[in-house]
Image 1: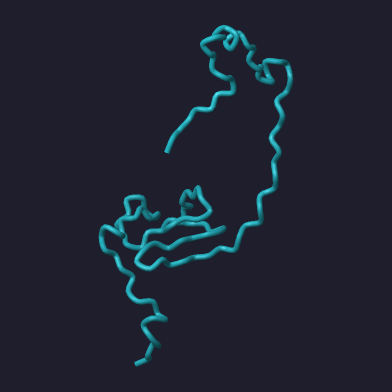
Image 2: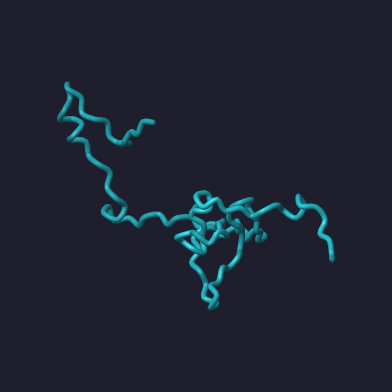
Length: 121
């Protein structure tokens, strides 16, 4: 993969080194005495229905508008609409998953539909 810096001005060539450097640079709107354009603000989309997905042998994925609270009722900071919650208990960033379940060999066991019907007894 190549990374190339973008430069709005072409580099000076060997036959015209001073011309490229003498070219005036555009002024910021504030320096030119104009007000910068205000960004267009679009309304936020309607929150999606909240869902919880239990990943086999992994975390719980929370999607949508769900508030996560500590055992004392304090809200847990959440920066994304989809987050993974730890189920193995070994994460170093609890309550969020950091992938440690893969190293510890955490398993969730068979799902109820794979285990067969539940018997009362």
